[in-house]
Length: 610
Image (cartoon, rainbow, N blue to C red; front, side, top):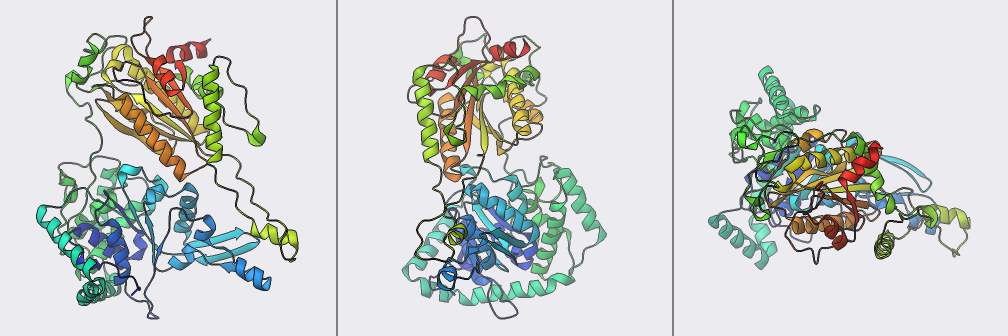
């Protein structure tokens, strides 16, 4: 036990689903670990850290370690690097183990894993896939085993997790329900007792902790002998297919988790109750199809908290519906005929737009926009190597050009400081000391590019199929970003709310189906959308200092919200979708308030067709 007392695992009040999922990951480490998604203050980190104190010891009597990966860790700290102290003392190049080597056979814990820099995520993906950490740098060629259970916590309000890393977590527990009054009181009493005398509190629960450790060890020993009937395999395959999961990792993980749960119960074979208990944790982050209300198991729970029927008596955690209301069979939500006015759109006063129910409007293909859309930012080029940059469009106002240059200087100043290249420094001085100068690593060529799209889905965009044309423009941009292997994120703002239509990730090959499902209606929360986008941009740049973000605000400009005090979005283009000869919107005013470029969508289409 460490010198600093950790809150005991058995003393945590409530959280039965999360406790069971964590224990199953110990019974069978091949599950790949657990992702804990929930709001702050829900004991995510407490349980993850407490898990290390109940891990069964290995054959040599050692307890596997819990290694914490900080968000600010360097790549060398994670994978290992040249042992500089040995080099300076003996002149010998030796490998210094990193966090991955220390986590071998134990747990690798990442708090706020969704904020982990992309460079570290890439390294984790490589090691998680092979179980081997290979280091080829600083004159070293080294490889060692690195098999561990990955425990991650995240607050979904702070951003999405990269899908490649998300799928590597075997189980995902989504915490949504708030504790009741009685449970809150019990939590307060437990915390008060721990804070008063941590060591005495831990000693008081030592017997329970030891009993839990013994049960885990027995379940591990029982696991290889657990069998499953043929109908278990068929049920897993049928439910996975119904959930629309991609690949077969869900099937394999589901089978392993069910066997681990059977071993935890002390059973000799997998029963249906084992499948039902682990189903929501296996499918929560892999499901692409909505649960069937008539389905069996935990999916039938409309509240999203599937009740486990297993002997543990612990509940699952389902997948919450985060989307806004979608158009269904209601005739009032059918799209207006091509070229016709949607009821209540442009024909009614602006203050009544919010009274409209959401109306579905499919996208209008914009193949001609595929060429000019990526050329929008050419008037705001990214700096080239050596300080050269492309010419600036003559249509830009001088004041806006100065603002762009200031934004570019700020982005350059936020780049991480150059890192010393110790191996090159040693070669440079050929063993002579003291060193006259340090050699530094060359900065990486090319910076990641992210296109952030703010799509106006308010009721005013339904007239003249403006929303459909805007969707087509977004799809054209996504296709070009896909070809360039760039990232994209799409936010919809309308119906008096903001919705994530496409989380930040590598641009998909086809975004049209998802865009077509987005209804239009309600008011235009422009200020809220801009503020939310500014927060996202700041967070992404803290996470990845070299990230280039280009924002597209696609709107008809019809909002009554004041434009003063809007936060700047940096490299931004306002695309005005309004097509009337006499514009009722404020597209130009919005662009001026944001210091952004202004482009009418109609002009882009006309320019592309000539």
